[in-house]
Image 1 (tube, helix red, strand yellow):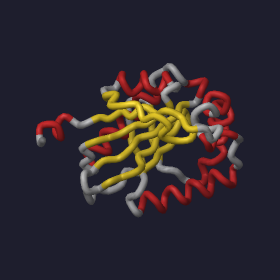
Image 2: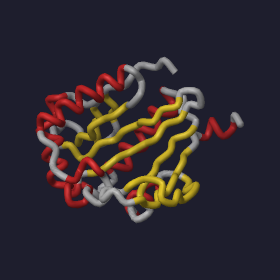
Image 3: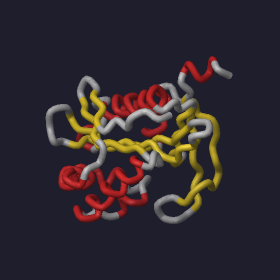
Length: 189
């Protein structure tokens, strides 16, 4: 699809914004408050990223967005500079088209539905704007909160991939593969 890349997505309570280097201090604060909960699941969260690294990653993300390899947004509470998480669409295969979704929520804000709201908004962009016929999500089989979120919003648990990827310690771990198909894509089969 040749749709414009939405740099901002509005929901009822949130504003999802494409990464910019200026957001680095707010993102670092969100990561710091969430580090303990992120560390079991996310390799980059084994130590607090520096502001300089977060700025560089924002610039890299925007380059990947321009090349349509990746789309990502910071999840802000609407009308504030408070980041409550991030969401990413990556591993695009434009021939199908399909992608993978990833997300995390700021620990003090978890349980309020913000990540669920943001995931649904990103799913709508992937399917409506970019024609994704399949959105996948992978998570460590031990990450039950992430699995519950996916099931709650309509993803189907397709399989457990044994020893599929290294966990944060480098040991092989089992991952659960979830998938979601927009209703229109199911009718096209």
